[in-house]
Image (cartoon, rainbow, N blue to C red; front, side, top):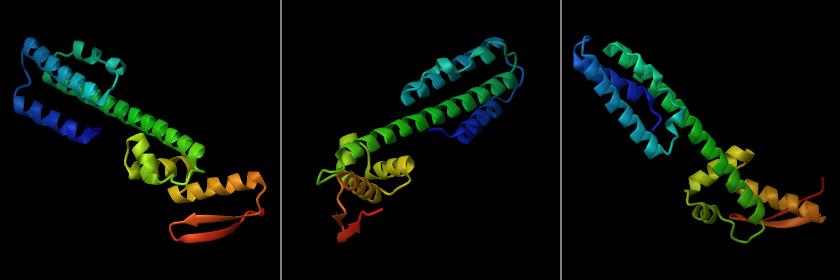
Length: 173
């Protein structure tokens, strides 16, 4: 997933395995159709919209090197698009996770495990999402939200329970 170098190496191995530069246009188009079917299969597996990809390079090819060039361009475009979509989805998921935490931080058991279970992701994913969105570790973010909430309520001190015991935190600015 997203490994452009590996895909290009496999493509080059395939082209070198063909052994001839002069192959018929019919054979070239057959190879192209098979390649594009493989691209479509990967896009379906990764839930990508392939309408963004440029297929026009395959129409004008006249040689195996034209195919190789067009395929490398498509691999690059596909991997770039995959990585952009992955980053976007991770950022949207991270935003949703943080919004959930901001809504539920006052609950007794807002554990990382429970949040992960709620979103169907791993604890590592939750921790990474919080860190990416807030710049804080999960536990520190929960404490931060609780302290900020206590400040809003006008409380001057609060007892915060952590896994290492209670800490009396001063909330005076």
